[in-house]
Length: 317
Picture (cartoon, helix red, strand yellow):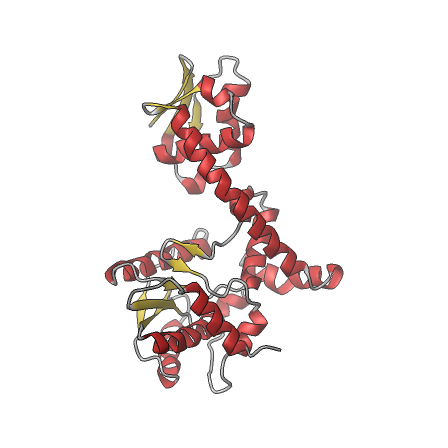
């Protein structure tokens, strides 16, 4: 079996193969995945004369969160990473708490990157995290874009461990390192925790250990498809656009898969809230083209309205 530490170091080196800057940011919760990433990145950085900045975001979810954050910094320091800081996040809204916290965390990390001239931000998501993401989105009835799951690279964010199993990642951590066990990882109120603890283990018992590989492979294939669809959508959106409207005749000539994506892109570009825009809304707008019988205007999230007028789709707010 290959040395887990070498496997992680190789993954980080590959992810940063084209990097020519000085500063590299690692998001670290103190848990095993992000700790393993921070340690591997520090070794790669030492060889390349890069400066590693570790950011621990404290969401203040428990009475122990501040102490855990300090413990994470102490452990990092004891293992050679001294350039680390704690950033206390603003209070997380109660509704959809996990997603809201994730968005806040990304905003904090993006700001840190901006402060360091666009430095890359490394995230510790593993192959198992990817499989869990695909499965959760599958049961929600998501489309190909969502099922493509997490990208290895998205803007400044890089996920070097996305092709490495969680067990290998954890095995790379020295025995002397005391990782933090986040209570949220055992909270069954979160869908991801239930998938991790119950659903995936059951699938592996019943369907075999290749379940994770299969889910990850599906995401990889869908990502290639989605790259094509994204390029085609932007091209066709330009062809269908007339001022701020869309031409019905041009839309009608498109394959339904592209037509729906053009409509979605148009609605989002106009300012319809992405978190509230569902496939049912897009389908209703699409029927102004494929099933036109004089429908009234369509109400959309955020106070937007779409209607068909003079062979155009128009949107107002």
